[in-house]
Length: 208
Image (tube, rainbow, N blue to C red; front, side, top):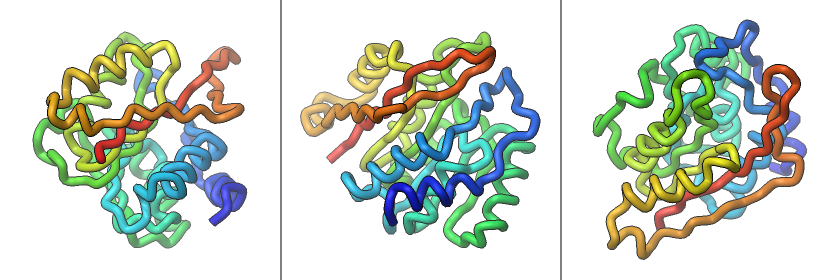
């Protein structure tokens, strides 16, 4: 599938009608989701026939994109029942059978899904609504769940914290086999409330 075809497909995904600001329910645009998933699929081969987790899945744009790219199964995790209801409707509209969803607090998953997934994808909350550090908690959970790779969208200002989090969580043996790869996309920007725009970079922590 070409990138433009993937983006066009993701434009059909319904989003939040009344996003909950305290949960940082900002939509992941079809362009950002498409670029991210296209790179994961075509450059790293980490989607097709893989078991994929989408943390903080919201309405499911990343999960649906992964399913369209032939993930073996993509499981979305989110704390908000209303978001998962929209997600379920999207899955039904797309008639996808390789998607499942779990309602839970991602930060409280613990070891329940340790190394159960090949790939973890996510656009986590940035921690701007009296929840500072939640993006690092998501990253910690993602690393614990993934056996191969984690792909996450973050504010560029948190890169140093993200690098330190990964170095701390991964043993020295595994660290020697770890590639830190930052992939920048032109126009990879996301609208925020009050018209502000925050530049994002996608970075992947890939265990070989």
